[in-house]
Length: 129
Image 1: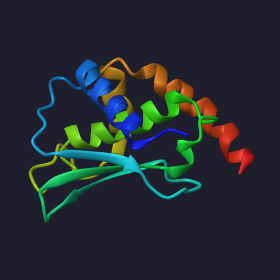
Image 2: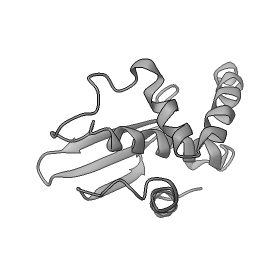
Image 3: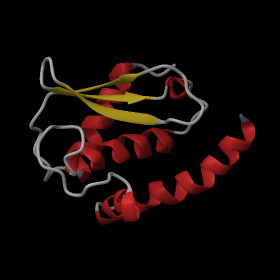
């Protein structure tokens, strides 16, 4: 079983290698949440302590799920952070997914291989649930 420490290390690695130009304006907490069928991750701003919380699908604690899916989900949520969505400050665009903005950002950051893997993996995943 994967732990929240595992997620924290994955987040730090992805941030240092791919999102190094995005300043960490807030404390970022990442952890596994409840098991869900279709929502793989979420990001939200916590007003009480001005931190950002990334929650990853609890199903992904099981090591039968590939690391690339977790990396894709973390990267996806970091794209939202880079575009200003989980914070009360300015946002890059009005809608967080319009026009494939997340895939474009991930490709720009050298994470296109995760998009390709995700698109092929998710088809088999949906058939299995």
